[in-house]
Each structure stands twice: as structure tokens, then as C-alpha cells.
Image (cartoon, rainbow, N blue to C red; front, side, top):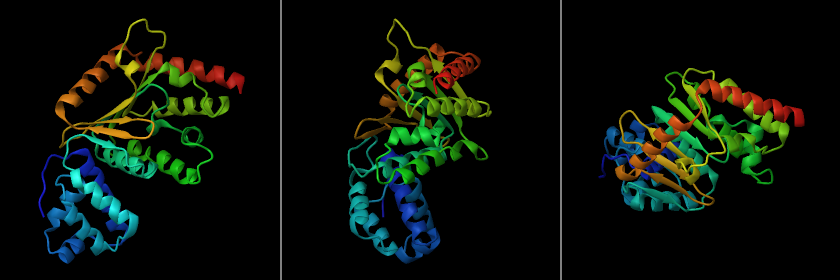
Amino acid sequence: MAGNNEHPPKARALGAELRECRISAGVKQRELANQLDVSYVSISRYETGARTPKPEDVAQILATLGVTGTKYEELVDMARDADQPNWLDTSHTGIRRELTTLIEFERTAQRITDVATIVIPGLLQTSDYARAILGETSSDVDARVAMRVGRRDALMRRNAPEFVALIWEVALREPLGGYRTMADQLHHIMAMAERPNITVQVLPAGSTRWHPAHAGSFILFNFPKSAPIVHIEHFQSNAFLHKRKDVIAYEKAATTLRQLAMSPEESTELIATIRDDLEGRA
């Protein structure tokens, strides 16, 4: 089995999927390695994305774990270009893979910078707000909401990453889910902002000059032992950027927006004002 050590985003997402399959099968890493007659280190590196498995490697792992059907086909196909630095996911496999990938990045990140221009950052969403975002008529909405809200555990654990939320004022004033839901959402943001590893800054509306937030939302993940990854969510696709020249542009954008944003103290005051206004309309 062979691969590389560049930690590209698709390889990391594939690794998270393989780890999930192994855990679901009740098999430990060393046990799987013995069954495949490979080193324990190889399995560990596949699951962290440090090494990219070939499609035949993935097929062998899944067969050993008893994974068949659509899941088998999707993951073997996913391995075909998993070593590429940038990844545009248009597979339409549903919200689960996107959330699984984001959870993996959030679990391993040292710092997360979320530039939110239209909706509240996922890591700060309440269950009612998330339900309004994900769609109340979806058949699997409860599972999707639970999975999304569960992501906030990444910010609560010991040695949690630094989280910087740069939220455009427009997103704070859009009463998605109704006035009461939005007021509760803003109250939750204020409570989360009190945690030492969380910084919330508001980008004021009404700018007469273009700035990077006008180009849309993005999340910048910084890791302790691998290069940064940028996540961009589109209507029916997701892009994960790992190529250095692409990431640099988003790093500069994040720096610019932090300079343009209100201070954390000013941001909290504005959020409280908007919350009080929404409570008055509820």
C-alpha cells in the first residue's frame, strides 16, 4: 500500500469515513492491520489523511470490514483522486459527508476562523436555528440537526481550538426561524463568546467600500501539524482548498476582515441590542 504525506482535504475526509466504518464494525486498528497484513502505522495514517490509500487499498479495507453496497462504491470512488490538493465535492451524497468532513477538521484544528456573511456559523447554531437552516420538511432533519449542533462539542473539550467568528451584521438581523428563534440564537452567541477560546466580532453593515465578506462566507482551518484548509459551501457543492496559493488569499482576507470588524466588546453590545429588538417583536 502506498500514498503521500501532504494531508489533502479529500484524503482526510476519506480517512474519517474509513475510521467510522472500522469503529462501526467493532474492529481496532491493530486488528485490522493484522487482517490486512500491513503495519498498524499504515492504517493510522490512512485514517488521519497523512497517507492517501489507493482505490484497491480502500476496497480491501472495506471488504475486510464487511462494508458493501453503495457505501463501498462511494468510498472506493472517493479514493481515485484523493491525493489532489483541492477538492470540489459535487457527489450529492447528502449532508452527512459534509458534516463528517467538517467534524474531522474541527476535531483536529488548532484555530478555526469562520467568516459568516448570510447565516450564523455552524459551531454557534442552536438546534431551532439549525432546523430553520436545514429545512423542517426534510425526512432526516432530526439527525441532521443533532449532528450539526453536536459539532459545538469541539469548542468545549479540553485543549479546544481557538475559534474566531466574524459575523456580518446582516446575518444577525435576518430572523430565520422567527423572531423568538433568532433572539434565542443571539443570546446563545453571547454566552458562547464568554468562553476563553471563542472570539466573536461583528462586521458592520452599511459599508461604502467593497471588502472580502462581499465575496461570501468561508472557514479557514489551521492545524498544528499540517497545512491550512479552506472550506467554501455552495448551494449543492462544497469546495475544500489546500493548495498554498489559494489558501494565502483567504488568510489575507481573514486578516483584513478582523481589522474591519468591531471589537469583541462592541460586537457583544450590538448583538445584545439586536436581540432585545427581536424579543420585542416576538
